[in-house]
Image (tube, rainbow, N blue to C red):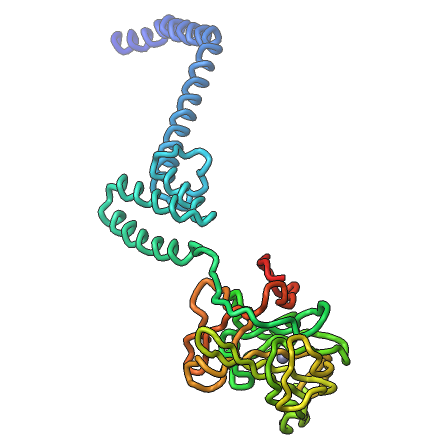
Length: 363
Ligand SMILES: [Zn+2]
């Protein structure tokens, strides 16, 4: 009982002392907290800052990995990548390809191949190099072509008129050409279209110049008139009716070193002023221009045909401006074709105006 009382008492009487001691420690802690608050706040701030720094470092590490494995992203870093690194080499390659600098591109691919550690990547780079070589070969412009020349033609009219249709080197067979392509003397491929300024009719076998009806038409060279009459009546799809145009053909014999036979053709005339069999001199008036035959507007259709030295042995229309494309003229190797030669005498080639987009000294 005493013990219990004592305990109780002890509990009752002694408790104030420990309570005071606890209160004292709480006070001390409170005082310490008050005193240390600024220092603790600083520690918390520093801790938070160090976490931010750590997060930033991890993010940077991830970004670095991403940059190193992503070629697409690497292309965006062209400015910052060091020149010798793989990323730098790839970005230089992209720029070299953009400006079609094949030599530099091949050099960079070689350097990439040398630095690449991954055998699979090296293999890919080797096949890429072969592809690049082929592109370099095709894309490298060869020296300007020198067309074969046989200069004997004069301009078939005086003055300057706009050209409205060119010779189609891709099957100049008129109606028989339905390949839907038009290949110019310079090797440009166009889609023929009636509204095209100079590639209107697919398979066009000559050159058209728009000129007023009644413009004097001149013999392009000395020769003998082989035809001077209305053509046989035929259906003209463009006009939706049958037509009979007036045309003149002149035969030209060129002597040396071996005889070459040419024929010039002048179509859609309004008047013929020569007879068949008649000999004509260069620039002699043979008739007046017009709009006869299958023609939708006044113009001269001028055509040159080779009568020998053709693949079929039959007459074949050729381009009097020759062939200036970088590849092979398809018409020069066609079974019905022949090689086109530059046939104009110096200063005599009629202007091709805006259809001539390369500045070549023809006129
Ligand atoms: Zn024509």
